[in-house]
Image (cartoon, rainbow, N blue to C red; front, top):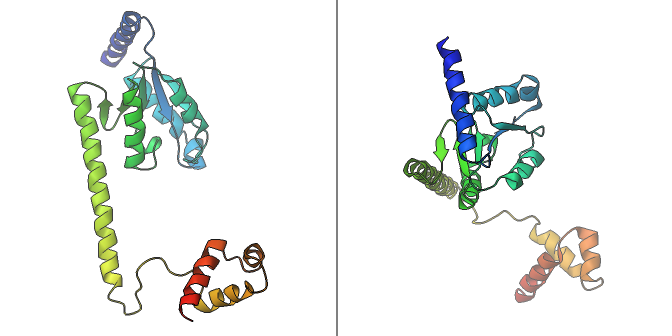
Length: 215
């Protein structure tokens, strides 16, 4: 009985809020799965329920694609959002591949006057608390970058203990292969040698300069 009554009160409040805003403010919920199995198991529906429990009148958008590089529903939704609208997501990884990407999206939406509510983190808006939530996200981003740098430096230091360690990316071609390709330039054009060997023109030019100095 209490649960039912609370839903009625909340629904009434939603109606009052929409009437007070002239019906212009819209709340959009976005749901996305990571695998096809999650979609079959009803993961999108569970996300929709979590959003609807919090925002009774939210318009729910479900992404059918599981490829984070191909999200047509999300892309269209971003274009639909207007100032004073609210975008609701259950978790940050539902709309971004990492924290830097998430912050970039949220920052762009905030600049347009759009609120973003990540249910397991908080509401990012222009309120004092909203600013705190966003500042915390930026702090996590800085921490994540610092850890990445530390791991990279630690890995490099460990690798340097190997006597065969060389700074930079490993060579794609050996000096012998590159020398043979450069020698072909005495007969063929850069384009032809590139087609024959698969070695790019820029690499051939560097190789030719390198071997010319050694003469």
